[in-house]
Length: 166
Image 1: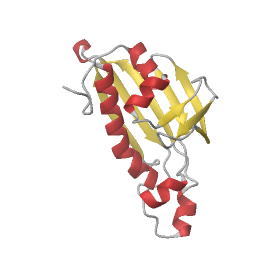
Image 2: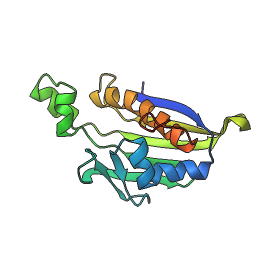
Image 3: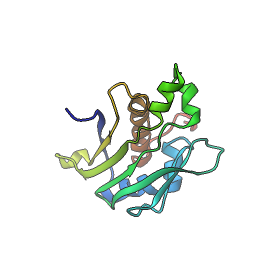
């Protein structure tokens, strides 16, 4: 049996090119990730710096772009747990925390036409490489990615956000 993974599929009424652009454009990322998120040149091997606080600076967290095929696939290593996560995930012991911060996962966005053309573009997110099924990072990203991709869908389909006037 392989390592646990989180896989989520969503259909978006857009083009593959616009979806890829939204995954890599700093202004788009700021919207669908709520002011947090990555920045990079998005070339294979390039660093992916991360903003952990909307008012903070981008930080080097050891992430790297693994694949960058515009309109088809984007993959990068994921940051390890950061100090802010220790309280968020309520780690019971230093030993548990020390073990958890060594885990290094990765995320991939696969973009393809939907099976039915009227469904638009099929985006498959796979976040894998977790050490165990009880990984705290797996727990965190499982809910987080659903919210992020729902907001990305709203953005690309020209929908309205809750904080916007009607």
